[in-house]
Length: 213
Image (cartoon, rainbow, N blue to C red):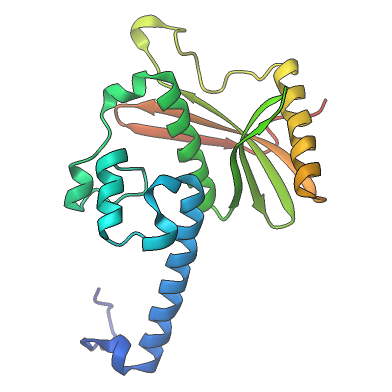
């Protein structure tokens, strides 16, 4: 990048010879490693906490077995060879799981920390995502849909209303989770909508999308 009215000098292997570049390189690597550890909570089968996204043998094996995930760089040839197929989204279980992972990825990219994914509360159901931001614990309900113009209503809209029964189950499960994990912070209930089209996913985040009243 060339900036107007400024002089620049290219320094080969600058991170090995210039202290300020070395420091910046260390900061970048530490941030990347922490980010990959966070992504590992969402995509544990890829082992991001171990190889940090580098092209290791284990990483290539995971790509071959599970296919590419949303955070893989598509310009990397092995990723291109293992991109998921559109038809796989027709399966409801696959669709829902991918939607939850995209929602969690969105949260990470927006400064949230993921505590848990798919927490199961006996007799109450599941909490899709439990996250943190500052001193607030955030319970996220994820709604995922693929629109089907030819058969309106088959999948519905991702912004479908959460009924009273579903809301009460989510809040009861959250109480159980907080008691089990000894969490004593403010708790917020959000809704994240993920809508798939052939142009790509559209994500809408509604903080406090679920209310007690």
